Amino acid sequence: MALESLKEVARKIAGSSSIDKKFVEEMVKEIQRALIKADVNVRQVKEISDAIKKRALSEDVLPALNAKEQILKIVYEELLRGVGEGLEIPLKKAKIMLVGLQGSGKTTTTAKMAKYFKDRGMKVAVVAADTWRPAAYEQLKQLAEEYGITFYGEKGEKDAVKIVKNALERLKDCDMLIVDTAGRHALEDELIEEMVKIAEVLKPDYKLLVLDAAIGQLASKQAEAFHNAIGINGIIITKFDGTAKGGGALSAARQIGIPIAFIGTGEKVEDFERFDPAGFVSRLLGMGDIKALMEKIERIASEEELDPEAFLKGTFTLKDIYKQIEAMNKMGPVRKIFEMLPFGLGMKVDDDVMDMTQEKMKRFKVIMDSMTEEELLNPKIIDSSRIRRIAIGSGTSPQEVKELLTYYKTMKNLMKKMKKNKLPIKGLGKLGF
Image 1 (cartoon, rainbow, N blue to C red):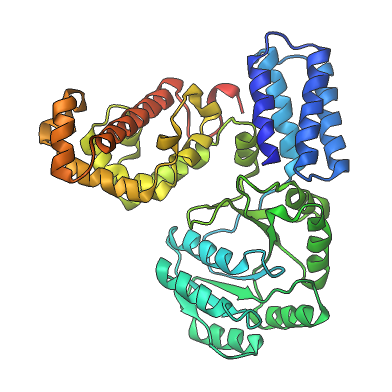
Image 2 (image 1 turned 135 degrees about the vertical axis):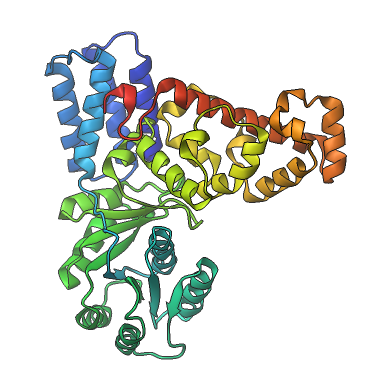
């Protein structure tokens, strides 16, 4: 996506031999190009770039930083100011109403959000109140069942307000109620009337607008229209992946002063996260998001009864990998883990390792089942003859066994790098953020 080019800007700053006026002016132009291509509002682009240029050319370098770190710090802070606030929904009893146009991803987001809160110990239920799109009921029901979430809907019922009323009676014991509402191709009077009635009955603690990241400059008008109609508390940006620009939705939130609550970065349930402005901007610049990574490790480690400290020792064996594979699976693709590390900690990793799939993880476990205790504890002894024996015993190929060993070495080196850099849970360590 267009915002990805900001990482290249940060790399150029970090790798520059000198910081002078010419370098600053060229850097600012690159930032402008990246933001404009990402559909960020032109006025906001000018405000951000002007502030970066002014500070970079006038501020004295702080004693604890060198010139490059000072410039990175300024770029980070001004982009953070441009992104605005995030909305954190606390883990307590609440009713949430999702609204948005058809195709924005409301139904999928309803399920993802429910899973997000369920994973954090909340008793969650979802309500299918989209009576306009025929497939909405079945889609939400299927997703809810898949994720083990309480579902309520009335198939064939056309009165969305009635469905919500009944849901409130049936689901009183739930901590969190998330209601999926109807969307249209445009914000019509009939849709506004239905949303208002649902809000009157539900009395939601949060009314969240779901915006497609690819909507571009239209995001501001759409957000303003929904806000004027029912009053929006927060925004969720969906499909914020490698193909979406996303800047328009970010601009919309900033422009009308509504915080962003969550972003969806892919189709999978784990591709959904609370919007933390600091971590988001850090990742845009390739500086990683150590706080989010450690929180994810700690949550999943507790589910799998693993020790987060042991996870990061960098001394684990294949036997440890066997126990941790399910945890790694829940963390998502290896590529997403690397995105949370500052500049990838300088590690170059093969695409095959980065794009590790759940199916391949399962095959790795089968391969390890064919290994001896000694091989699991000391992978260095696995030579070509052992690889052939393991492949035959596991019904796989020698190449797959080698892939497992490559994956193991990559993860071991990654953990060693994290330990060597002494990256803390909070902040970005050496960069001083």
